[in-house]
Structure formats: structure tokens, C-alpha cells
Image (cartoon, rainbow, N blue to C red):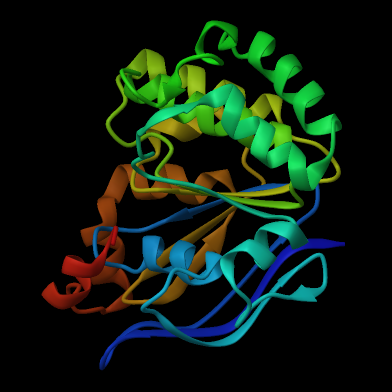
Length: 253
């Protein structure tokens, strides 16, 4: 069974081609990693899958067999798709408990019960009555997003740059939190530049993206290879030109 299935995903921002026929599958119970240099299209894939406005996407994106491409963001979420942001936004005036309460309007009382349990497991109970992400460290913001994920219990989670801006201890803590949420009812795609976060993750599959395409796939050893030779080494091996500056500008938007 496949939690997330991406087939022939082609994405443009205006006239600029960013993703060029991406195929990627994440089965239930597995944790996959998407790696690539700046400007390769990783964050664009995340945004296209979730339905961020401004991206013209063609192809297919299915969550547990249900096509979501072309649907509004809220419908994709209801189907069971979750995005963890590279830079979680602050929401002054709204507490984390209130946010979870709004989630429970759709998901039912079980959402609140899951949130209370996750808050204890992640040592975030004191943050439930604080404004969402306001005054939190980078690691705390990422853990807050994992709390929201656990509360919603989605089918597919795409976590964009979970190690971005974190120190060594925070990377370990967040990675351990990701490992702790694994289940047979969830497929996880982690997007990252670096192999450092993989030290703490039991990775099932690694996909490498360059110039809007998946250029290599493999197991954990592929991440170790990248760590040793770098993206420039792999690019030279594959005979690829450097990423274009226009795509690099869009990365992370």
C-alpha cells in the first residue's frame, strides 16, 4: 500500500520549468528522504504536492490512492496529507491549544487526546498555552509541528528541511521525534540538504533530485556516498550542468 504516490509531476512557476516529470512513491510504514542541492526543486515539490498557489502542476499526486492534484489545500489535508514547513510561522494571539481545538472541529475529540499525549512525549506540555511558535527556538518550532502531525494522524507527511537552522542537539531531538511517530498507517518523506540528520533516522529509501528530476535512488548508502563526494561530485559523474539561478531563487518559496 502506498501512502504517497507522485507520478510525472511537472511544475512551472510562470514560464519557468522547475519540476520535470518527477516519479516518487512512499509506502505506508516507510520513511524516505529526498536530497539535493539548493535550487534542485525539493521545496517546490513539497509546495506542489500540498497545493501552494502560484505553481502550475501537471501529473498525478495520490494519497492512499486518492488523487489530490487540483484540489484546494484544505481538501488535501482532509484526505490525509500533512506538510511540515522549513520555517514554521509564528501566530501571535493564537495558542497551540486553541489551534488544536480548531483541528478537533474537523477531526473530532480524538485530536485533542492525541495532542495531550504527544505534548507529554515531546516535552511540549508547557507550550500548549503559549502562542503558536512565538518565542520558540528552531528545534521547539519543529517539535511543535510534529505535535500537530501526531494530533491529526495523517496518512502521508512531507517534512521540508526539518534540520534547517538547528544545532546538533536539536537535529538529534527532532530526528528522534520523527522516528517516534513512525507507524504502519503513515508514510513520511523528509526533505533535506545534508546527511547529518540521517545519522538519527532509520531511512528506507533515498532519492536525489537535481535540476527538477530524480537522478539517483538507493538505500542509506547513497546518502553516505553524497556525504563523501558532495553534490558537485555526483553532478560531474552524471554529466549535469549546475542548477540555474532562476530555480535557485525559487527554492524555498
